Image (cartoon, rainbow, N blue to C red; front, side):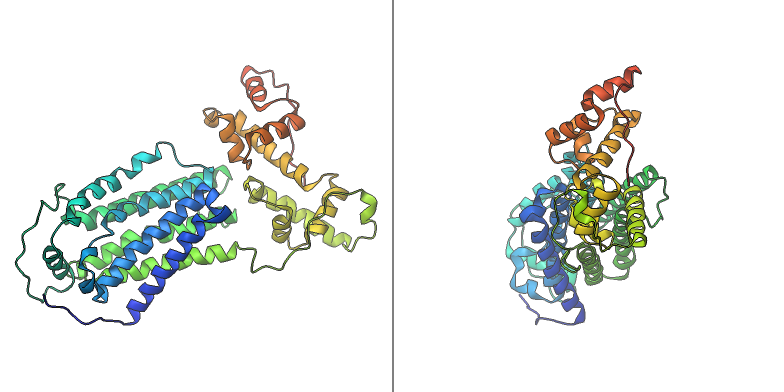
Length: 402
């Protein structure tokens, strides 16, 4: 066997930092309290998948693969996992749950895993020839006989085309889901608000370019010689995700004052807020609740809401008590129940179970949702749905406040 020296250049360094960052993000989203959210788990596994793919390209591009021939094409099955995982992330971010029959989307990945089993048992010489064919066609091949048929599906020759198709399909499905979410907000796909949807759209467009990069790169190079450019683009996607994480992080924002429990109004008589500031915060609250619907986020807290309004949690609590005669939790329940009433009335969501509606409007606990709904409307969610369906409509309608 002829081995080539290790080759490190700027592209290799870009790919390497992409591998490291994707690995970090994968672990970040899958651990701690973050891992409890299904959307975070999907994004974490998506990042680990990108890390595996770019790591293999790094090994091949730098010639390290000569020293690790057993790992030739080790990430091939993951090619059919990143598309579904990205779609799962978008769907769960929009609906707080995985799409129906999500397991069917993993069938191509499972098939390729079984197809890869025979590949793993091939002799090292066979893998050496495969690596040369992809990255060093100028070197001489050595004689080798496979132990087993290495491609019982006879699809490995079409791995690039199938990967392209998979990524394209799931990028389009993601954009369609986001477009529908914008329409529910009476906005177009290209609107800047709600910010949450705009960020998901931009990330989906970035993912949509991935198969287009494959189309542009593959015809220009022999076999896999151009994969380093695809890996560099994957690094761009990884760091774009990192940017979104940092933009949504509380670490880089001014620390808010500790949240205060609702207290009698006389406590705020010597308020440090001017009337103009009060009006600006209340108007901003109304706009925020209407356009971005942060109350649908299960982890929304008073400090987080205050940060979005550029005020302190103390001042926001004061305003809610003085202006609306509500605590933060009362305000949150009012908006969530109002949203739940819409879902219970909407013919398009009649198939949703009560616990699914509770999750959609931001409740992690179905019992907490029932308690809030009964307190505000005088009915349970099931009674309200039944009343709307038979036309009695006896429950109290909730109007969003702010």
